[in-house]
Amino acid sequence: MNKLFYKIITNLPGKLGIWIFKIYAGIVSAGFFLFFPKRVLMSVKFYQALFPNKDRLYHIQCAWKQFHNFTTVFTDRLGLQKSQEISYTSSGWNHIEEAVRNKTGGIILMSHMGNWEMAAHLFKKKMPDAPLLFYMGVKHKEQMENIQKQSLAQSGIKIIAADQTASSPFDLIEGINFLKSGGLVSLTGDIIWHKYQRSVEVEFLGQKAVIPEVPHIFALLSGVPLFVFFAFRSQENQYYFTITEPLFIKSTSRKNRNAEIKKSAQRYADLLEKALGQYPFQWYHFERFLKY
Image (cartoon, rainbow, N blue to C red):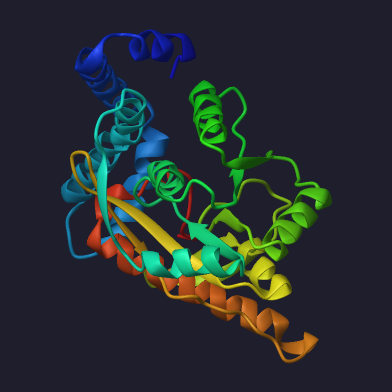
């Protein structure tokens, strides 16, 4: 999406800009659906795995809903910038508050389910003094992604960008030190950014999937709790956050470290699968996920 156009829309008064943007985003979404058949096919195959007893037409309709719903990620961001009232309800928020209050540190494991960016903004609004670091992947030539990062940084969130080649070991050390100082580190749990990234295989929808290993390694090495965090759009201008109780990864010896990491990764995959069953059209992972 063009950065200049977004800035023009942002400067339009009140709800006028939001409505124009919604129309534009809908056109763009339809264009992607019609002219990027390989990406659509990826979504269709995913929904075949999620709804194996449905026919192909239903799976195509699911992909259409997925593409259309994805536009709300951008329209809600614009609404927030224009001071539009965005409210939320939550389950398990007290676990995060306790970690911040006691300065124990914690890993917030996000997913491409719902709108994690909106969760980050509302999180910082609710707890402005909470130290928060985000690891985010970099997509080259993606202008809207740059706006996203700038917006998060302006809200007081520290950003570490991981490109598509390889992460610096110093970035990992910085994350560990941030955790040990009592900070909260957010990592993506469901997407592999580059071929050198450490990964772990899990069971998902009766098939195999590969997810990042680093969040679980961080939890093991630092000893801090891991919180699985989902941010769902329950209705217009309304979100529902769910946060698990603190999950710890402990290993009694080096020999069983890999087993404990895999166990933690599978636990996350099970929670992700459950969330997908509740909000199937808020899955905004457009790359290959399942090993078909």
